[in-house]
Image (tube, rainbow, N blue to C red; front, side, top):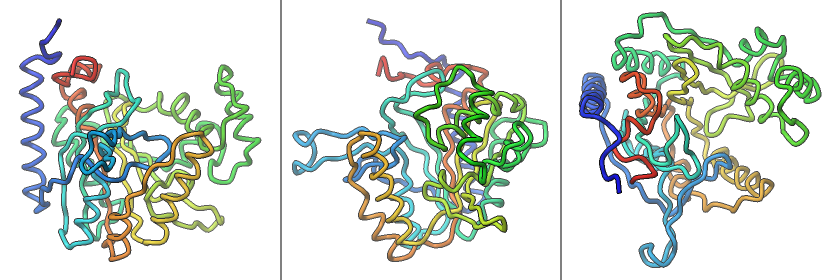
Length: 322
């Protein structure tokens, strides 16, 4: 049996230095480090993110617990309790995510800034990543989601008819079977197969103003053309997505509606309903301050820092040998 770690000492030292640099960055900006539980009574209702669930027989008081996929809900409870600006470095778990850039257990940096706009948060993300990755010397690239699709396909993703998106996908990705794909899946395919490969490998690329259907728990902004966009962004280094940020939705009713609609979507996809986080909703009802938040995958940042091209080589004991 091979019991040894898959990392080398240099990579372990790089991770330790990266974590130190992150803590220094936030200490200098007066952002408080916090801890929240890894186990929760509720899971993630997002149909595209699967939570690990502990069986009733081994859970406390015969009540199921879920390993968190993100510390988002308890951190927002802290915001509602008056914590102010906060960050956390923690392990998270997502079932079924494995590959060169994925390990079911990985390390996430998540932080929230009160009274920040999503644009201001993008700049802070840039500041942090440039501090962690000194080889990034080029100026960041920033594009709206719409801009990318117009430049690549002459297609406006917010107002295009479904048939036009199908036609574009069939032309651009002829090997993809599109019959059963909905609008979001088609746009995702065009983004990952045709747009992301054009992102420069030696600079950060920010994409923002996603379709409202991809808002998750981000605020939605109405536009003059009567379409809506989600006030969120993703940051890439080359084709590697490093992070995902939101202008956080603070309305209790909309947060409740989103969690319920996600479970409805899960039913349509023949997935089990997931118990929604009532503690989070109670915090939202009490009042979450206006804020912007982001989550960064630190293992991918370490891959970029070390020049290692597989996530299993930057995690001491990845899933198969954990």
